[in-house]
Length: 91
Image 1: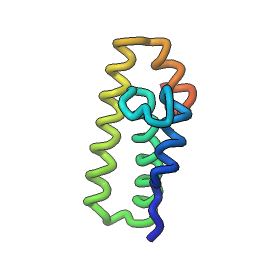
Image 2: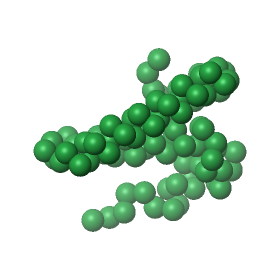
Image 3: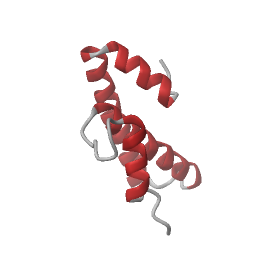
């Protein structure tokens, strides 16, 4: 099985949504990374609907992303709105 999330892909995500390629701590870069992983796991669940371990992981990731978005919304509403628009998330 090919690695779906290589170091290069992570650096690309962090570079696009964070301040730099090594900016792994900012809320924007973490939410972008979680969104990428959620999309991948969602596709996996469509093909393997009985994989309950993956289902649990997916739900935990969605919860983590929601917490980070709630934090960002309370801290800086403009950054929140920009991130939602850039990632194409609802709300």
